[in-house]
Each structure stands twice: as structure tokens, then as C-alpha cells.
Image (cartoon, rainbow, N blue to C red):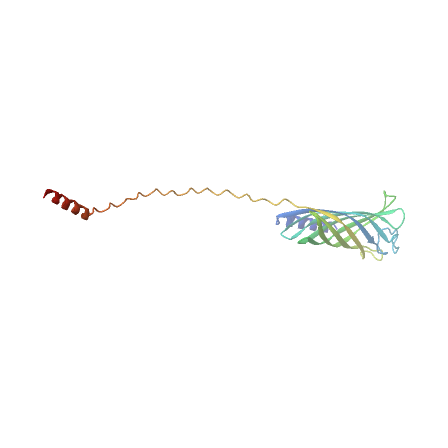
Length: 231
């Protein structure tokens, strides 16, 4: 178990150094779980069936996902607390998983796999038993408000069995609720102002008017008029 936790932690450190976008998700919901009668939780001796069949209660999830574009992945921590169908018994579950998520418009699809520790208590405080197994889940969610989604998550648990040492039995759970997504604000690109181009002023070109040619006909008439007066 320690080796598995170490490998998951090392893998998370490796992927976080190679991606650049992140988001955090917090889930609040209701869960119900059907226990396998061969589940070791609550059994006080070998070959004994568990003391309860069903538990339901409050589910809390939180994850921190890294990724690019529509795909992201990262660690998820889950906490469940519920009452069983046997009076006076309660169950708690703590799980550390590796979760992945794909966004398609307003729809989100995710899957996770991790290690889960189940605890059985009596009278809310007295610990009776605990065991560690595995949890797998598939999550679907859709936007209902800005930054908030409704989600459902079927889960599969593999828990230690009373049948033989090292054996596991499956059990199933369903979680429904509301999740809040927190994403960094997009970086605004500030455009640099363009330099103002000064208009090109063309100096005026002087216009030279052509002189009108002197009329020779007018000069001839003056000469003839002067000649007549003299004679």
C-alpha cells in the first residue's frame, strides 16, 4: 500500500511539472452504498458476514486538476460519512485517488481510481473496525449556473473479503450533488499602442501663369488711324 501511495505521489509530481493550466473542484453531495455480505468491514471472525447491508449520508470531494485545453487530471480527496441500516453503527470513508476530466462544452466527464479506507464506528465515536481497499468511479456533470454543476458518480469498491486472506469483493455506491469549479482568470493580453504616423505635408508648388501674346492687329489699327490724322 505504501508503494502504491508513493507511486501515485511521484506520478503527480511528474505531471505537474509538464502542464500549465489548473482548476480546483469542490463537491457536496449525498451518497448511498450497498455492502457485500462477504465484506470484511464489521466482521469479528473469519467467514462471518458483515453486520449491515446499506449505508447513506454526506459525501465531500475535492480535487486539484492540471491540464491543457479540454483534458485535465490530478489528485482527489474524498470523505464520506453515513448511517447504516443497523441502529447505532456509522461508516466513514477516506479515499485518495487520481482523477481525470474531459470538458465538452457545458458537459464534463471524469474517471478516477484510488485507495479507500473504510471505518466502522458505534455510537458516533467508538471505532470498531477498519479496512483498506480500492475505489473506482465515473463522474458526469453539467453546468447549471456559472461555475457550478450538477453531478452524479457511480462508484465501485473492492474491499477485503472474509472468504480468504488477500481476496476482495465488490460493492457499489452512487453519489449525486453539486460541485463548484474554481479556475484562474484568463490572462488579458494588453495591446501595445501603435505609433501615430505624422501626415506627410507636400509643399505647394507655385503656378506660373503664361503671358498672353500681344495682339498685332490692334497695333496695326492704331498706326493707320494716326496716319490718316496726319494727312
